[in-house]
Length: 174
Image (spheres, helix red, strand yellow):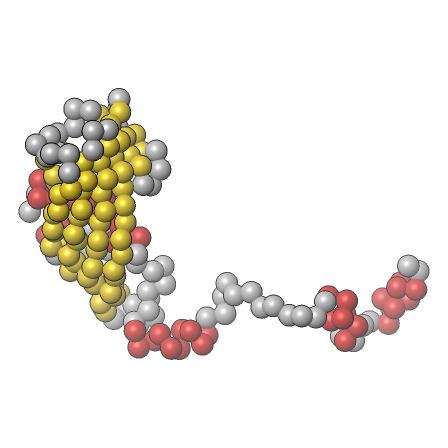
């Protein structure tokens, strides 16, 4: 499948809702994949609503990415299911305003959706890729990034801890 397989001809579309369905497999990842994500099987349903001055798109992605465990180097399937939206507005030149708003030239004949589908799938991949058999173990040991709260004030903690006698002499100077 070439790039055209993931393109939608918008010139011939009427101003209403249109549905498109894409099956994503190894051919898709050969075209768009990187070292981060190069294998998986997904189904993407695209709801495209064409208006006079803009086009709304909603991508419903469901499937599994084939990942390599960071700990054991074993491959495993990571389920992904998400909904993402992009609004394509007509304007003078191609420009990405935000992640969700893209300006396209008025004479654009087709929207190439493949790159957006790949980005939505890639963004759902976790930074730390652990095989499901390590899930419980990871939750127990994963203290990194967590904030521990206490009802004790810092003064109460200082009073409880044994203080070097030299500091006590300095406290008297207050």
